Length: 588
Image (cartoon, rainbow, N blue to C red; front, top):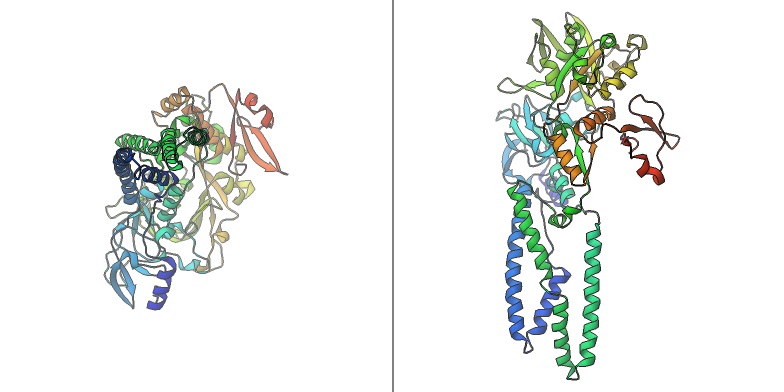
């Protein structure tokens, strides 16, 4: 469970030190042109002009350097990683500089910033703040790798619940000093190979799209160069003096047509704009983009936490047939899904146990917002520890947990309650529907789920089954239990709209900037929020590019899933006059 010195040095040589380096190239063609012009004037009797231009150039250079230094300092603050790490080497815990840590090192976790990507192999309770990297406002509980997954290859996404990424902050962890008692993690990536490093590399190496402004600037420079070449030939043809005199005089004319200080004007003006933006708490990593900011005609927004408020509100938990008794309201869709009856006992137990919540040191629930709000909706449940839940005064013991999987769109648990071993599975309605016994599903199951999405409801489904797998608990896989389930009900949530979102969208529209939404949620829920925010005008109907069948996009009306006319590139502008387009991720 450790690496030797030779292997460590070999990995250090291959990966480099655990630092993020940033080098900027200053030797640009225009700087060489400036140097050439000063050198041209200095030997001749235009020395006073050379002195004046040198002074102006040096002054402009210092100004440019000042603004550039400010931008580089902001970038440095984003990239700098300082500190030490407690590493297990030769069977002992030693403190080394974090730049000397290499992939494969076993480190002892401690509160503070994480400087490398790690995978937890031993811990009791680890709480991580991922807001600086992912934008998640609530702390996330991390758990060690499950020994039952030893046959699987580690991957940061597959084992997200056991991964600590560089750029995040460890809020709580064990404080054991011995290797046996400490929280330990194995380093998987360092330096620019970490999640933070790759993010910064993407930001800094991003090449923006070519704007008309870029083409026009190049055209203007070309025209100036042509004018300078023409005047150069004119000077040589008009002046009948010595060629040396004609050359230097011609260079003076070229310097007038193509001013050496032209780039300085652009950089200084951009630097001043950067400072003004910083006073408004806006950081610009690519200052060149400021020159074309006024050309922006399209704005793209994320849904959750941007157009809507951060977090989610619990609306109701309903048995499948209870939806038949609800009447949709066009004015307030949320109120249509509120049931006055008490939550079904099966759903209450499911909400109490089917989650990945844990307790912080001060007793606060830590985990995904959906899990926290669902658990809080059951007043007679209490999380005692990571392995036990109290429901209505009775203890429920966890036997196995399976984290949420983005491929299956489900999460599941195996519990023991009243000497009965039961399976609970929670996930997207379309995923749960495929796992359930058809006879247990309510009538018009898929239609109800899609209508809920049209009404802006973020909906999950719950299913259950008696555990009857003839395996030891360490050998059980999620494929063994996520099948032949009985449908339990729907769990409904909703994102509340930010109060200022419609006004912002309207301001953009008045500035001739159109807006669009990009979201990972159900496309119908996204359409609902888009209408509430003003992204889609009320009079417009919406058609969805839903699937691709036989290399052909299938278009349907968002209101009733009926087939819709397919837009063509030649008629797209007319087509969108009274309709809005939406696309699923598959089609995009």
